[in-house]
Image (tube, rainbow, N blue to C red; front, side, top):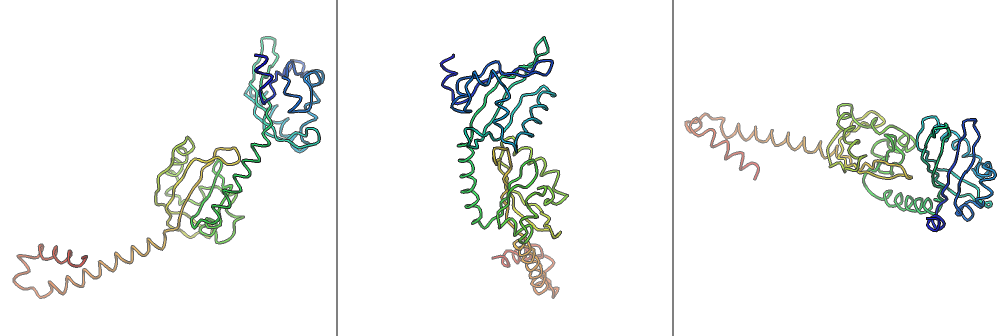
Length: 285
């Protein structure tokens, strides 16, 4: 087991919070040297050395999340920056929470350097944005219901050119009130991994104008958070064209019907239905 721990690409630790508020590392694996720049002996002798590694801008969030985990007796999961040997590194810290009979709190967990993973994710994100910016369809990504990304075509559909007014808004604000209950159900299904099939619905632009859209939604990961990717296109003109076509067809049928049956000949009464059916077939041929 010790050999396994020694070669893990992560720091394994045990951290104790005493009833009087004192805190100490009661175990830390040898990976603390290469990953954190501190030996196990240094960390166990002075726990404050670990605090000193936290980037000053991220220190308040680390303290807040740690305290919240302690108060709620929940697992702790924190992402942030450490300054290791003068270099900023991104780390992820995870631990469980166990209260002992003597009221000590024991946290056992991992510290991982995720800098390369974040760099790769950022590179992938940039490639993705470069690709979708060229697509003639609208693409939005929302996290917990709030829009965090919109490609230029999506902005054009919803807001003209004001991208700053799309990103940051609640996605549901763009959905017509009559469709919102259904869309909430779709969002729940997508978040558990189901793709939402294409549907037609009504969006509300920022200027208040209603547009018809075709929409697909897929589960997505955005900056390591579960998200929903929405792909849509404006079909308002197509729907209007279909309505005009239908109106023209109805008008044409009415005119031709009057021409064919307007004289009241003896044939009409006996063959009216059959003749109208033949007429309809001929009109649409």
